[in-house]
Length: 308
Figure 1 (cartoon, rainbow, N blue to C red):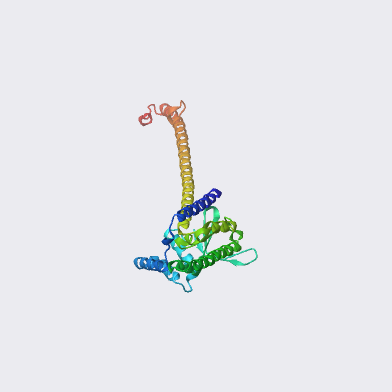
Figure 2 (cartoon, rainbow, N blue to C red):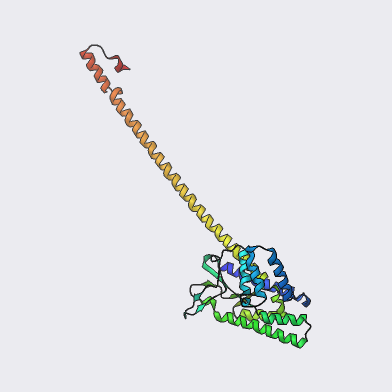
């Protein structure tokens, strides 16, 4: 299982680095505003049936209101459910856990892995700062104004990283997890908004035992989790098959032993029967021969049926 966690960490780093190189070749004009996001989500919400009600909740959360803080959780839960990972079995949402100081901590998500290992994910995003910065670019604000919004956005991101680090989920009792907590940003272009401070943010998060993930990276994680559980199920199924085969073999061996005993018993019975018959007719002094002698002496002629 330690190897799985190492693989998970390496894939996360590879995905982030790959995204960084892809980002450098991308034009700033590819930024998508919230209005366009609202429209696309609402269009998809109309197409999907009631089984995808969380997507409609996601659209509402994007527009603000009391549910805005739950945006990341709604988005991640949609991904986990669409990946057919059972809730409260493979993943748990808002589970309350007491630390050694009797303080209650409530991670947004706990992903359960085989061998009782876990991954903790917190969903965060500075919506107001992100929106202000992107709208400043779209509205053609002055460079200094845009840079000011960007600094506030970066500052809010670092604060989220600090807050996550201070929670120390990995120190919670009875929870075997990797040292780093994954912070999930629900919008695909959230990393692009880091601009030239992307590597700085990654380094800052790494030092705080935090791994950053956008929807692309979180899908890598979900895929790894599915593979780990599939492998675990295969191993358990193989173990069950082995147990059942051993039980079948034991039963066959038991039946074979019983048959062997019965055959020996029949052989013993047959031999005993031969001995009894010999005493009755075959032996020199068998009952039949003695009877014939008596009849010869008394009656003079033997009984024919005794010779049959």
